[in-house]
Image (cartoon, rainbow, N blue to C red):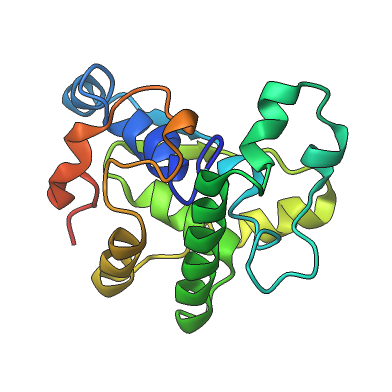
Length: 178
């Protein structure tokens, strides 16, 4: 997913926080890590679902760059895979009694080195929805189910990746101590 994603969420948010060049020194020195684009460029807002009447967003209607719009082109097989992942993650969120936004933000902030997630609400309603995630704690079961949808350190659409995330292979590096 572009930016964070059901998949890029792993690369751009979790692994950005987990990169050896960032995460280990941050944890060692006590510095905080800010995770960016925890909603995967809109893919994890709940709007992009298989059962949605129309998969579209403000972003797709207003972005002028064709290379950026390609991240949302549903004729691209990898974007269909992102849609499948977003739909599966929405199901996990529903079963956990959460919105997909709450699930995505809580997932990112579960990482031990992440002190905050950079959010980008466009409206007051978006801000309200995103702030509701602040106190959400995901259970190990929910985290394991997320890992089944998008394996740690992977990208559903390889074109969304900006760098590798092998450090995420060990679940202990992705979760806070209980």
